[in-house]
Length: 222
Image (cartoon, rainbow, N blue to C red; front, side, top):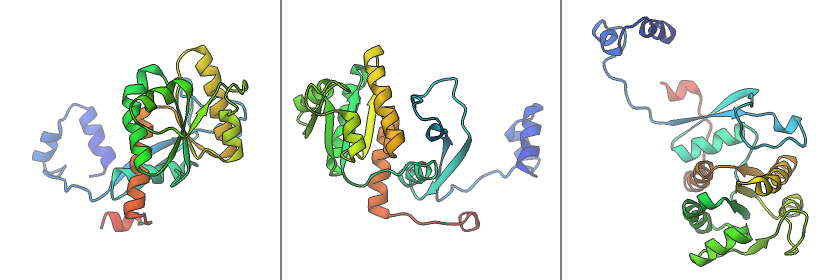
C-alpha cells in the first residue's frame, strides 16, 4: 500500500499496530544505512540588504535534502544543496550572546581542533581566552574601527570563511544584521544558532575523515 494510503488510514483513527496486524504495514522496518537531512532554501540572495536572522514570517522557496553515511556528511550536503559550502580551512568569526557563551565554548574548542583560526568580538574573545581557547583576532564594533578590525570588512576581504553569530539586544542585533548581510553578499556560511554551529563542525570533521560521494536513490533503496 502506498504511504499516502497508510497516512489516510492513520488519520481516520487506525493505529500502526492495527495496520501491522492486517499486513498493510510491515511488522519491522530495516534500519537504513544512511542519514538524511532536509534544509529549507531561503531566497536571501535575491533580496540584497535583507537580514537573514530567522523569524516566523519567513517563507522558503523550496527544500533540499542531503543524504550521507553519517549525520555530518548529510548536513554538509544539505548546506551545499541550499547554496552554502562549509569551509575546510581558514578563519571562523564568533560573536556569541551571553546565554550562548558556555555552550559555545565547546564549539570553539571543536573548531580549534579542526585547525580553524578564531576571530571574535571582545566579549566572546575574553570568555574564550579565559577558558584557554586561543583567539587570533579581536574584532570591534561594526563601522567604528575601535580595534582596527571590522567584521564586515574581514568578510568582504576573504579573511573569514564562516561566521557563528548569535546576538541579543538591539545593538548586537544591528551589528549582527550587517554581518549577516555581508555573509550573503560574499557567499560566506553564516550560522545563527549553536545547534547549527555544532552540526557544521560535525559536517566538516566527517567529510574530512570519510569524504563524500554521490549515490542514486536506487542504490540507497536496493
